Image (tube, rainbow, N blue to C red; front, side):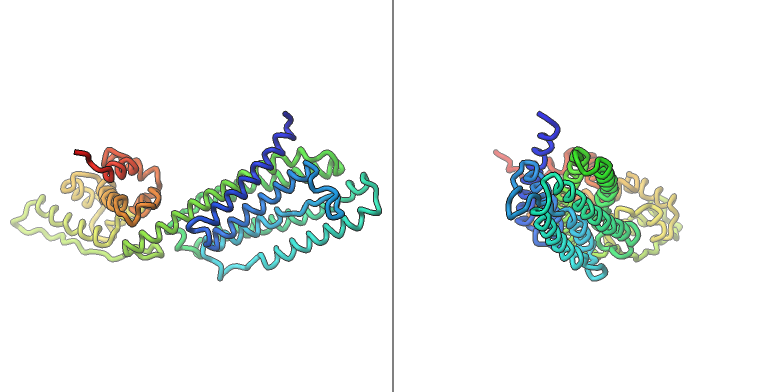
Amino acid sequence: MTIEYLFNLFLLISALHGFAFSIVLFSSKNGREKSMVYLNLLILAISINNLQSWALEKGLLQNKFALEYMQFSWHFLAMPFLYMFLVHYLDLPQKSFNVLKFAVPAFILMVIAQISFVVYYSDSASQERLDYIYERYSSLEEFFSMLTSLSFFIYSMYILYKKENLFPKILSFDNLKWLYSFFILSSVGYLLWILALVVKISLNFSDFLFSYYPLRVFTTVLIYWLGYQGFKQIRILKERENIRKSLLIDLNGNFSVDTIKVDTEKSPSQSQAERHKEQFQEIDDFIKSKKKYLSTKYTLQDLAKDTELSSSTLSLIINNIAKKSFTDYLNEMRIDLAKTLLLDPEYSDYTITSIGLESGFNSKSTFYTVFKKHTGNTPVEFKKLALTPING
């Protein structure tokens, strides 16, 4: 079993997997969302490209339609589709250029040019000569495709890294770490592409296919990983939006900035413990009414600004009256809300991640850890136990 055989098998399996995954995505609840449509088109472009490469290696396309080759640059469409997915996921379609107005006509012209090129030379050159000429031509086309793709890639990175002020809404639901990771890994893919093209030219356009093996495997795995992540994140995004609406929180992520003036004057007849109890009640009412615990970044220093009490005084009050730290005090409220959401039939099909994040936790792992600490069970175990009928 040779490396070439394994690579061709990978191309076929990845292509079939991509088509199946696209059907699943399109048939899903959020499959008609514009961001999902472009993500789906991205996966389809890579799948078709892999299927085409496999068919060429097996000799299935030769001598069809008067062509000896058919290597259309489906990968040319990948980055434009990724760009369109990005701007729709970040909710920026009105502030961004529709690159498909350029990419699709350019791709069609490349297809027409390639067919015309091969038809023209197929009757006027020997097979060996045609091989050489075609590989040189396709290398020029590939070089153009790479430069164009790289331009879209760099501009997409610019939008993601430098224009966070343009998409505050999405940042209140998603920290976008998965997208940052994708772009970092994509940089490796471009390096592999450049290396493969350099090897192809240095070998005078013959016996170069091995140089594309790492590139094809890496980019295919990366694109399908993006598909899974995008599918999951869009579902979580929609679920979080629905939960947040039900909790009557500003969808832009702007929690109330109201403050409270906690009474600091002590009556002569009051003990310090009684005074702290009254102050704690005011603080507790304020945090619950303003849903401050739903903000993952709400700290003791923030509470100090809201109440005009020092952090040390607040810490003392909460520790003395609630008998717990400020973090545990907030987490208890978050856990109570999470329990309610987990058992609410309206959210029975929602992911645990969506419920945890909208309850005020900054990650799924933190939610699981804190939930088990407070209840003795994971969220999944809690839900299962609570919904399981008790047999007499």
